Length: 221
Ligand code: BG6
Ligand code: MG
Image (cartoon, rainbow, N blue to C red; front, side):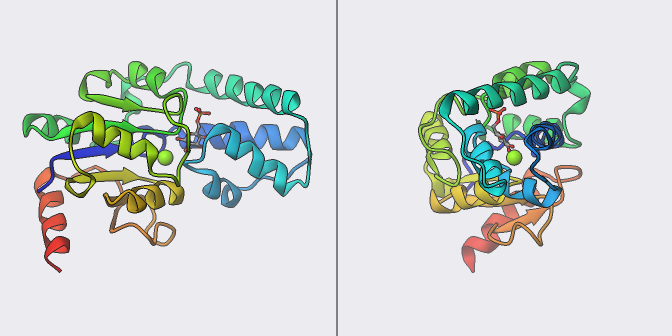
């Protein structure tokens, strides 16, 4: 039985993944490092610092801590600039309706995001009231693929991972959900989210009853 759902934010609730990509690409270009969409796919779900480390590794560049902090700050300023005008209309199709139906059916709702900007985006999109628990990049010690972010959410909602569905668009996020014992639902491309229990393209026309029957079917097999 599904008692709760935990949502990743970037790429699941809002299409902010493209803004992260553009900001990292701009930073990489400044450092003369090529950064493609394929490289970006591997960064999805990772914390800001882990993302920077991967980019520097790709460019075979070693930098001191102060420089790294300054680069992360610069990337975040560019990112904040691009989400400045974010509006509730930018919530991905079907998400709000799905959240409403969870709420109406007494299913717990939490956010499990690596982002330190999660609270800001929820506010801009008028989504804060849906989430009983918000675990973001400011509240975890270990970032995805570590399951900490989702385990904290489940614990705040007082539910067990086995009764909880996690929605994720990132390989690292799906791995985090699986290792925490959650039912992972990939959002996006089935070819890259191979470890997810199921993959759906998004929330448009996706219903709670469809989710319940998929989970029941899988649990009976
Ligand atoms: C994740 C994104 O949700 O948050 C990553 O998938 C991003 O791309 C990470 O790097 C950290 O976000 P922020 O907003 O704290 O820089
Ligand atoms: Mg994501």
